[in-house]
Image (cartoon, rainbow, N blue to C red; front, side):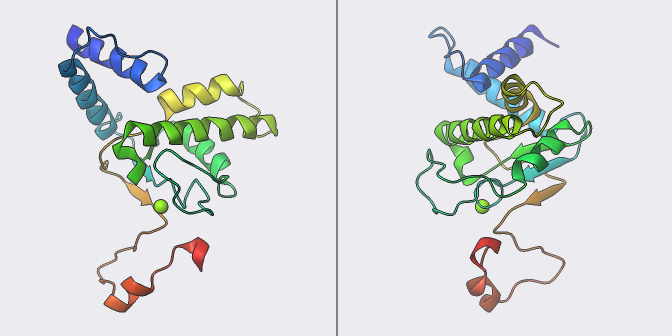
Amino acid sequence: MSDLLKAARELLRQLDLHQVAPEPAVDAAAIALAEEVRVMEVNQPEGWPIVCIDFDGVLHSYTSGWRGIDTVADPPVEGAIEWLVDLIEHEKIMPVIYSSRSKHEVGIQAMTSWLHHHLVEYFIAGGGTRHDGAPWATRAIANGLKFPTQKPPAHITIDDRGFHFEGRFPSIEEIFNFKPWYKR
Ligand SMILES: [Mg+2]
């Protein structure tokens, strides 16, 4: 791996951890390169099937509706955190969270801090007993999950507002009448 690529990956790691702000000396080109590495790594995570997971209405119960890109007001959907931990732990699955929030850094931050909070709660409540709680949650969010800013090439997509296309197109009536599972 080239030194430049190594440097880009390190910058990406720091940006993802939100622990270190980019140095003023780090110019826009380096950040752009780091973003390219992010897209590359999401697209080719060692050949593992990508499970693309929507956020609102799938992980986040979304009972209060949309409150802004940086606001995640509600608890998880029942079973969501346990399921996500299973995916993160699986050796050959790449879980990826991609939402309309993903296009802005504040949206990704809102999702990651909400997830961290609920992963830790899950551990405190006795779930995921194989893990060391908050440190595992931090590592899982930094390394075990991807938060791409562009739609990834997924093996499967899990979305509350999808139509499962199997060769038949939805009618206009079906489009108008569609309701996500939590509004039925
Ligand atoms: Mg949704």
